[in-house]
Length: 485
Image (cartoon, rainbow, N blue to C red):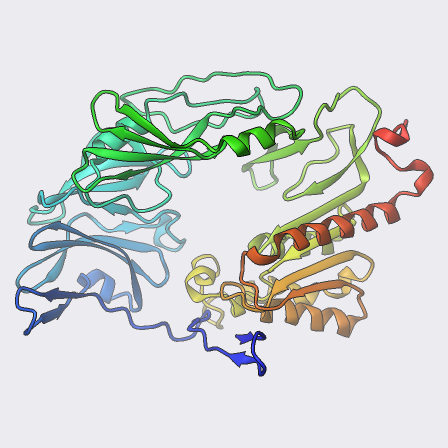
């Protein structure tokens, strides 16, 4: 990685194993600090079934008692996960649950078990995928089982964005997560928390014809408990305006003590903004799967009017909606989405006229091994060499000859290296395919420091593309009277 802030550019090395190359050796160590002058350490050894598979990761480690650590191991192929308990004094890690294999053992595990501890109770909690995608059911597992045991299923579902505090009472947290209203929006947008056997969800449907409502409820939370678990701060993560409140722990309902942050100023500013109207559709794919596609429609849109609007797609939906102008359809995406956007733009099916690829993955063999191998396997003759070759966007450079493409990347991106965009830029230049490229010096993957400039760049690019697709006299829009075809 090269940084350009100094008199001479600074070169920084980034540890970044790529598919098929050597991964770092993973070691987990326990230290006995009873005597600070003579700290004793011991490495934790994975269960035999993990060692036999070769390279491995560990995805979670939690103390479950004063002398036991629960560790979740994962093979490099990510098709086998083992939950083990490592006990003092030898710290051998033994399987505490039967190994979790992917379907058929050949695919990757779509969900890795999450482990939480409630203290030193010789038991731990395990989130296991069950039901809808992204839903985890909560189980209690005893760490004292002499052999792989059967976890106790609890009547709660949890969906956590991050690891809870070690002192969190998960059963209490689970009951809170399942107690609130579960849905909002119109009949096409049903966002709901996973139902539980203890508290089935109840759908509530409302109509918002004039745009997204200003006072959205909070459907996603994160709880931050005090060391004693007597109090917690409840953080609202959306879709409403983020808020923070202090509560006293009590069952069946917590007691609100104070609103720490209501973000009133943000709410007041939103009240003066015409927000888009969301609509979500189910689209049947040729593979037999059903995709959920969400559109953000202009505020105040009347579906029976003649005005046609351009469409900027992150996925797709076009022909079934008469108010979408099929001549002006754009696609954009970031990282993996940038990869898909570039491929969609290069497709022989002439749906998209312009595309924006932000920090795109261009060659999967240039990407991080843990992520690329999860979906693609190894890029060698005995692995998925053909898959890596077919997914190389640089081979589509000629197909982008008559399309408008904006390529955006930060030079300090340590997730998707700028090498990816440079490979595509070279291929496009070699093929004589014209494109636009925006490089942001010293910006990382999120392009956090240039968001305003980025959005202005994207808007200007789309305006230019749409003007070229439709002559001014037939340009769509409210001020131009629309199109009667």
